[in-house]
Amino acid sequence: MRGCWAAAVCRWICRSAPLFAVACSGSDETSITQLALRGTPAGDAAPSHPIAFASNRYSDERSDIVSMALDGSVQPVTQGQSAFQPRWSPSGSSLAYREQVENTYAEVGLVAPDGTERVVLTTGELSIFGEFPVAWAPDESGVAFATRREGDTTRIWFVPREGGPGAPWLAGDSVDRRELAWSSDARRIAFADYDRGASRHSDGISKDLWVADAADPLRAINVTMGRVYAPINVRWAPDSRRIAFQGYALAADGSIEAISAHEESGPYMPPDYETFIIDVDTTELTRVTADAADEKGVAWSPDGTELLISSDRDGDFDLWLVSLVEPGRDLDLIDDNDDPFDDYWPDWFAARR
Image 1: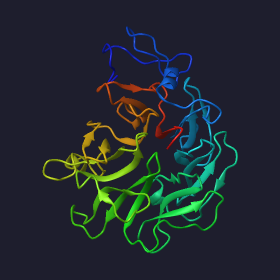
Image 2 (image 1 turned 90 degrees about the horizontal axis):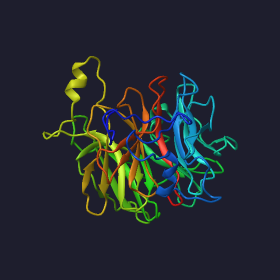
Image 3 (image 1 turned 60 degrees about the vertical axis):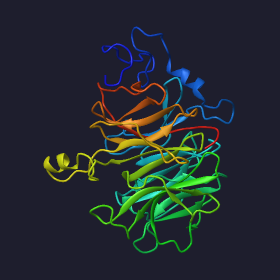
């Protein structure tokens, strides 16, 4: 298994809870329940299954939201709804998500962790926005998401959790913005900005990650500065200083890394996403992954020492725990090679988002 941190022949298998893993042979036996020691909050406010993700384990034709406990047990949250991109509310009382309707629309919905209290907040959201996540307001009053309700510009819209028409996040804004994320301390925001007026790449669109004071969002700073193409899945660390995200790596000449290999293989296929971390105060960029695998979603561990990444490095999309303090210690938390299904877009509940 790629990235195993003990003997090359070790394999992470959990026979009592086959969707999660225990330690490699030859190392001290470690249950996945020890993840509870890494910062996941305890008490009545914490969900019993703090890791949420999308999975097609219940149907080959759709994905559902699934939640996972620290002992490796899983439970469905939605069933039969084609739901994806789950995001915990700050209190852990609800999950926001995207939902595919009739293969045409990507609505925004809310659901309680036990699958009850489901409500659909939008109608007619174009399916092209299905992979762009929603974001909870820090006070849990509603959710922000990308939409194209006014003309052909993609804007961030805010809808109260009680429902209603909502309103644009920035009135009069004409810049394409694909997602919005508040820092864990709610003082800053980050957003992916698609500037139609730029000419950084062949499509005429410079795609970067911007950060601003939440109280003054128009005075944003470009933190990626053309070093990564098309950032997506923007996730603040618990320290409110670092951001993990995914995007296309760039070669030394500025072209998208390995794009020619993808084009030569037949009909055009986009390159694989890689995962990066950026320190928003220094703009220091760190590349976390560098492989031929694709990645769909990233989440921080509650203590900020690890990333939970969905990767297809072993043939199907599994959830991998990637250590930021012990490079190379990548653990496949869902090893299902005997009966592969895809698990992606994880979110790990933390007391403060």
